Image 1: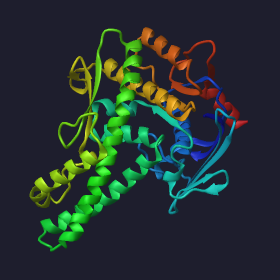
Image 2 (image 1 turned 90 degrees about the horizontal axis):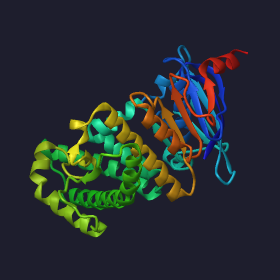
Image 3 (image 1 turned 60 degrees about the vertical axis):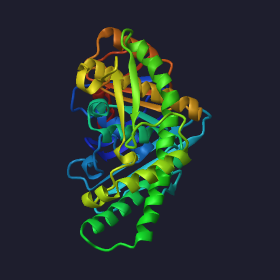
Image 4 (image 1 turned 45 degrees about the vertical axis):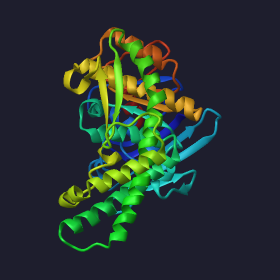
Length: 369
């Protein structure tokens, strides 16, 4: 998948801007605050209908503007074109228009334009709270497997309903027993499917990750462990077996859940443990090691998408080379040369001879002509 062209109107600092990257590596360079990151953010909006830096739609408006428009043209490896238009207006619902047809719900668009991002804000994946790692794996799988995305959306709805019933029970309000059992069975079935898919995904993904990490760091042994709120589970667990275990766990903890008014077990409580030499990296690793680990995760994500979808995803890399030495920077460029369209931002002008170099000053000049 490649971006042919994207137009920005009233998006962040870009009143009017047209961006046309090269087919291979494109490096956008310029000083901090010049709008490099928001160029990638606009592409991410077109691919996944939202910001990649946890910003709300309103926060992406240009100063004093009450609307923004993104208009992107994309084409696949088979030269199939896709147009995506994102329109946001204050006090109105955002519109996602794909090939001139409005898409609702937005989740229907997920996976149409496979996209991977790297940004400094994503360091929380490796050193932040468990919710960040769950978001990483959920976003990753959702772009390749529609059923998983549907299960996630259903799980969140059922979890909300079950927690509401638990809160009523905690307050002493009578709840029909059969209704509560029904929601418990529903959440058990969905939880089993989600956990099973995550476990199934991690086996080949880790092999890709381990191979890539060794190319970036020769003397470190990485590990990824799925930490399930059920306790120890094996890679050969079945959905039915997990469903039975979830039912049993909810029965065991029902009194505690009522006292707390919330569901205590499920994929919304799980975590990924990232290790180097059997030590958790968020506790022991240096900033350079953390960044290298995250870069390897993103490169493995790229290879997973390519092999699963038979389509090279977009690669959007924001400020990827800071805090990395010359050797690791060269190694990463070497790997990226084998990828498809890659758009990189950097405060410095760097790259190889085959990379397209675009300065923010030149984009500004084009915009003002």
